[in-house]
Image 1: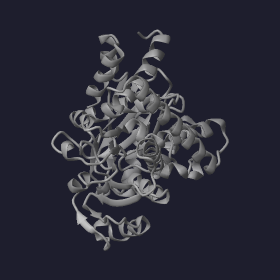
Image 2 (image 1 turned 180 degrees about the vertical axis):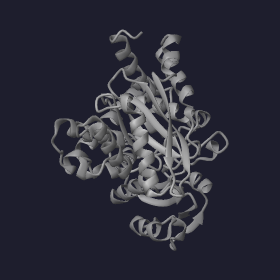
Image 3 (image 1 turned 30 degrees about the horizontal axis):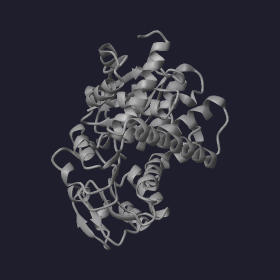
Image 4 (image 1 turned 120 degrees about the vertical axis):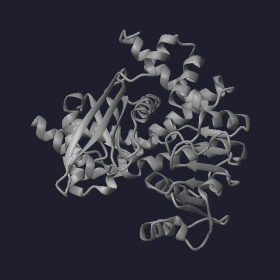
Length: 408
């Protein structure tokens, strides 16, 4: 998917073939072997990676995921997406992504801490506050970031708060970072609804995925007057055409483990949710959920990608012909990395920014980026899908930086 999207942007810009081949590969791909002692006395070995895709615009920036199915190709693709996401947002970052092939749910807290610390020590010479900044991703959180900070700081002999973002507030993190990705998704829904649907008030919304991103997107959208008619998690979803009470759903999710136990709606499948007749659809769970087989049946007018890569390239073509607007992930879920940038700047300056000011900065940045992208799309690239236009902007910024630096 990442390579196909890059190909489309390079062709639209009319760039040389050599540029495509440079950008499809990371500048550096690091593999590490991590050995830890388990509580039963045995030793276990895990493989970890860090893909540093491009640094033309600044230090590498991207999350670290712990998952039993992490692959090298996945990490490389995600690092490429981070390059475009950062470039589109106008951030002084390149793209990176890391991962360890592990099921963190079977490890004790002590085993997880040892794994995290040894991962950072193994990468010690390849990361840093001005070289590569880490963040949470799948199955990593603020606690893991705290271990990263401490392991790096102890090894270097300095308090390196800026080595990660989305840390606990006691270590220079911002509480706003927890809500920032979901807030950004909701903000994109509002911006595009205002532009193409006449406003967000009473517009129907379905959200696939009720984790951190989907949950906070739902809370903000409900607060702003949208009608959330369906939400889902990994076990299924719930639908009520009259609208769901999101605060009640959050309580049900926290106490009973799934939204399917909400007793004021009809239980539906994740597949059914994607095909509901709604104004806005937010796929905020996993990748590839909208593909060529179900895209013709999608009834939503606007799709806002809360997850990374939920719409396949083939589905993009189908949806474009149906005149469905797809707000791409590199814009829609960039609220997290924008807030991370605000946190990193605060750490580097040695002064903690106020939470309210951080949210205002995030709103200004995302609103400006979205409106500029819409204007460019309507003015110059009306025959393209919005994702291609977003990639054109991002790739162009990276390539111009590479040329100025004499790389190509």
